[in-house]
Image (cartoon, rainbow, N blue to C red):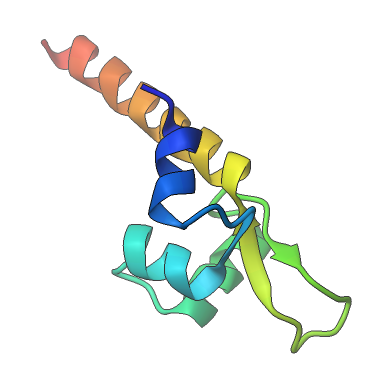
Amino acid sequence: MNTAFLLMAQYQGLSVIPLDAVCRDYFCHLTPPKLAAKIERGEIKLPMVRIERSQKAAKGVHLTDLADWIDARRDAAAKELKAIG
């Protein structure tokens, strides 16, 4: 199964997914500003795109970066399961 393809369907073909949507769908335990701060500090290894250099510019995550991040989290979970099983 291709994660990027599924994300394209979920986000109706957007190449850059708004940070609010990423937060709502994958980081519901955080607010968008807290998610942005964790990304900026490197606590969450997910590249964040700013449409302009301005601090107020729209922020988002490129679809392939989100797909790679989800796949990496899945791989880590599978290794953890194998280690305990």
